[in-house]
Length: 415
Image 1 (cartoon, helix red, strand yellow):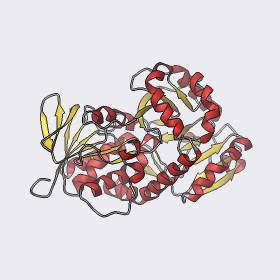
Image 2 (image 1 turned 120 degrees about the horizontal axis):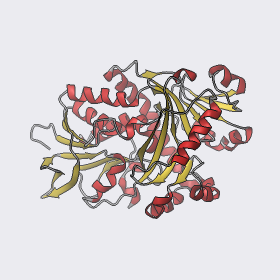
Image 3 (image 1 turned 60 degrees about the vertical axis):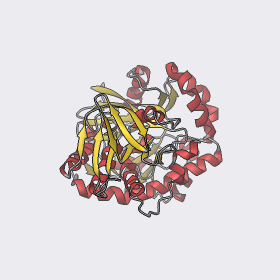
Image 4 (image 1 turned 90 degrees about the vertical axis):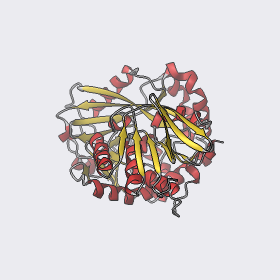
């Protein structure tokens, strides 16, 4: 490290993971430079559902997935599907994903995510206090709803797993759901109200507030694209379009773009891409009072500052700007079933979530060099896990003894 014991650290990626990690490191005394070719919080972190989902320990991996393979391949009108044009490039990821859908694998994933999520609550509260963002953070707890008795009973196993991981929820009947959210047109059989969960009504501004605090305490932002990570004579360098810069430590938080950077130093990581969508309905944010997850459709409806946002679903594919308008139309139709006063959405958006075949992030050192540390692949949980992940990265860099078992999240699991 630098001779003054304040390491010079580069953080690549200014989404919620990178920005939060940079802030936590800078606050601890590091000299941090944050790199991104785009403004902080304007890419994938811009478009999420806004939920701090401390309850979301159930992965998309599921042993029941094998019976659904035909729908994955041939339909866009499902919560989980595959982008046809990316099928060949996505195929190795899909095989790895299916391996991780075995019962014992899923149990391991749930336990690992559950542990990380439990720790996230306390760390998130500290972050909220730091950035004084009370107008952005709301305590109306997330609601998850089931269409039919069959849907609810099919989730009995998952809800049992949630309880085992310490998730506290209240089961609501149809009348209680309607009383809580009277503007829902659709009558749901049951609902789960996740206790102590929170949400932000402006995910992009939340990231910007963290970024501004990072700058205020001496952090630097470089609006540049990183083209390479070099290891020369045991030193690590970032290569931009303009120069080569030496750092004591490099932290890769580039989301779905991280795979290419890892390859430059020889780490081959099976990082895939989830193409996530959202629809925006300005003027309709008063129709609901909290994030509502629709079990059958795999998306959330959340009241945001700029309107009602419908966000979610999983489309395995690649990083490209092609929108699947069939999926967008399906989300629009299903949203109107739930709130029939909705008119045509004013806007739709496509983002690219980083996803690993076991639905867990990579947090830990590179296999090739201890001065390169990874923090990416948080899939649907970037907003929820950003602060705890950044704290773990700090503890790794400063060799702080901590109680986190990060072995399930290291890159070693894929080698």
